[in-house]
Length: 260
Image (tube, rainbow, N blue to C red; front, side):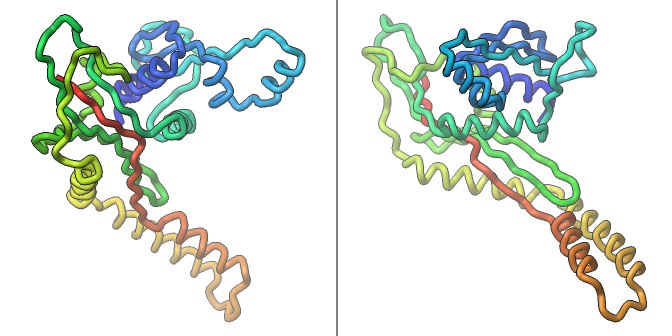
């Protein structure tokens, strides 16, 4: 996930959750949190408990998040560096899931236009994580037309050009889907599975080689010891957990989108 993708995600996340963007230069954002968002992500429950006990004036935090430190246009910007795999971004992914992993949205249209028909799409955002002693994470956004089965990549990016609303414009008609969302999701899952299968998995072999080298070093230290101590088994187990290659596929969120 590139810095610009991370940046766009942050802007979309905070705008969707009604947090005001105070500054946004493409490489960092300064955002004023709402009370609810402060409680969700700032980890200061005692502050809020005390404030509410004295009926005090709420003062939700401001956050400065830097997404591309190398290209900052302004000097002296201090903030939290956010990149794919960073604790803050992982926290926001989890918050997105908790706030609602599934939405139903309609494209806003001019109510005076006639014969407007909206077509249903299923959009799903996936995260693929490759784990060993090193970690790589990738985001994929897929959309499928529930009338034709046409599939597009970077679906989330395409939504940036569409004005969406949870309430359909009066007088607009939307088509009932032909492909059931659960069947469409199965198709998207197959696409993701194929992406994983076609990916370069030399990382797993390389991790195995590093595992074997560390295993040889461990065995060398215990050469000649007939009865291995408990710490030997603990180190072997720790190595296995560290180097074992694993792949995890997660659905971050998704929704039904009715668009022209």
